[in-house]
Image 1 (cartoon, rainbow, N blue to C red):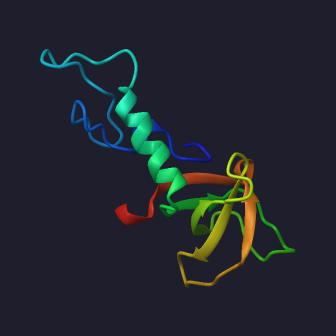
Image 2 (cartoon, rainbow, N blue to C red; image 1 turned 90 degrees about the vertical axis):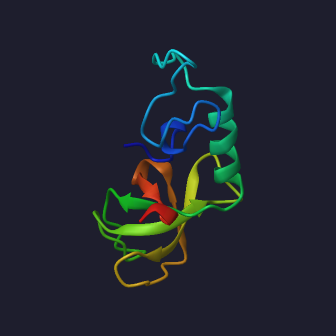
Image 3 (cartoon, rainbow, N blue to C red; image 1 turned 180 degrees about the horizontal axis):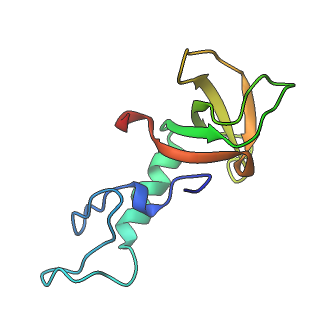
Length: 115
């Protein structure tokens, strides 16, 4: 897993590869050496339009009140989208921590809509 979604976390509209599967060439069905460019566009759109995803905390942060292993709905932090996510609410009980976390403090689990 990674801190943020990768191209394998979105489907490919060009070759119809599902989430988690590598792109295939058409019509032979062989595995493509690289993901199709459309997949990067889909990922970029999802990450820039506020699409929620689920992250798992990797460390305790007593100041904020989050614990390692807890899962949170998150989006990219709009003021620092290259380094942080905004934690929206804890998945377990809906508690809203009103904070941001660096990418290295969280692990991407799944898109919120696929739960």
